[in-house]
Amino acid sequence: MAEYRVISLENIKVACKDCSLATLCLPMGLLPEDVERLDSIVKRNRPLHRGDHLFREGDPFKTLFIVKTGSVKTFTPSEDGGEQVLGFHLPGEIIGLDAIQNEVHGCSAKVLETAAVCEVPFDRLEELTSTIPSLQHQMYRLLSKEISEDTGLLMLLGKRNAEERLAAFLLSLSDRFKRRGFSANDFHLSMSRHEIGNYLGLAVETVSRLFTRFQDERLLEVDRKHIRLVDLGGLQAIINGAGCEGHQSNYT
Amino acid sequence: MAEYRVISLENIKVACKDCSLATLCLPMGLLPEDVERLDSIVKRNRPLHRGDHLFREGDPFKTLFIVKTGSVKTFTPSEDGGEQVLGFHLPGEIIGLDAIQNEVHGCSAKVLETAAVCEVPFDRLEELTSTIPSLQHQMYRLLSKEISEDTGLLMLLGKRNAEERLAAFLLSLSDRFKRRGFSANDFHLSMSRHEIGNYLGLAVETVSRLFTRFQDERLLEVDRKHIRLVDLGGLQAIINGAGCEGHQSNYT
DNA sequence: CGCAATATTGACCACTCTCAATGAGGGTGG
DNA sequence: CCACCCTCATTGAGAGTGGTCAATATTGCG
Image (cartoon, rainbow over all chains, first blue to last red):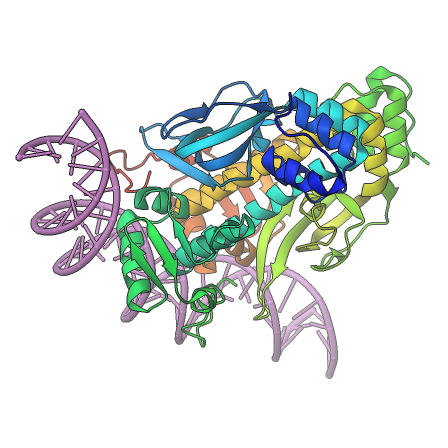
């Protein structure tokens, strides 16, 4: 049963947010009864701790996961024991959309910081979306958004240098924290330098050097995993290709 | 109206293939009448020629595009007049899924080789999918597949060296041609070296040098835009990290 | 308190980008 | 039909970013 009741229209957003389906229904004008139906299929689990797996590569796909609190990383284990980080997931973000395709998870998901995670059985969700057009539309938007974001990341990795990658990464985190009501300038990294490097396609040493350089350039202040972005504009300028304005890349 | 009639169950695949909705309905067991309904909303346009635009960045999103014949590239124009290639699209592939999100195209699509392209009005498609559960499921799978593929490419660009990137690119093309009934070993590149480099995040010169090297190593034969893959296993081995087996990357 | 994991910093070197020159097609106009 | 031009592709030489190796903090945990 739903932990949170929908009392009135004004409370829908609150209910949605609390039930961690914010990403699913917030942007749409769902009817209260539809929100409740959606809410009723959501399973809420006890908190998971650092290192716990939501699922592993090869596991059958049954449910989508929504991060409520904490953080989760997705990755593909590689043959030599290492792993390839695919993404970091903050509260409100959905995990598992890539597994709908063949009903098997193509990656693993592991908790970084103690996390509350909801599960949405996908077959139940499909039943709902086929009777609630606006929910179906929202699902399409959700999947489409994931595609857009992947495309953005793709360009990030393909043609950005180390400096631009880290700047983009930090601004992405900043933006996502901001949207969720946290500080955009002051946050905690739940992942290690190694994981950041892995995700961005950089060596750990490079990530470390860049943090130092950014700090020297008064762009941010870093203390271990605590980050304070001092000059958001400066970071943005790095991504936009400032710094060496005359520079003309060969493959743009 | 549909150009192709569905006569019997065995003909569904043919009808689907001909109407270029292969990607949409082939994998599912759609009923004949549903296939016809799907078919009836598809718009068929006259062939487009090299350089023609399917849509431009910023255009309102109305329809999905399906490549019937020929090839299309998608890209984001960058401020300095250059462009960022996002993908190459072969027959049977769908373009525009990333624009569902906010109903605006985030990239441009341009014809590489004379192409027949179908259009599927998305609002009509949504109406259909909400009354045909198996079609809805297929749409989810389609979107999910796009996400999976982006993820794969993401890893390709993030942590692969030039050699691995080009090998992966060629094998991807090979596989896609094969699935569509063309030769897996012998095909024509519809894109320039420059576009390949742009897509893979490499300089044109690097792409050119790699083609030469691969040819010297008897992995393939290249004549201008005509490619003959001689040693598929060898190319695969490059991606798997062969060649220098003792090599251990720092960020895997 | 000590060991292990993580982070930082430095020196070196390889890969690939950049710059530059040359070659090869493909189209156009005389 | 050929000369010319323009784009695309190839090849070489030099330079710079970032990876690798190694040593040294620093932190966290048992």
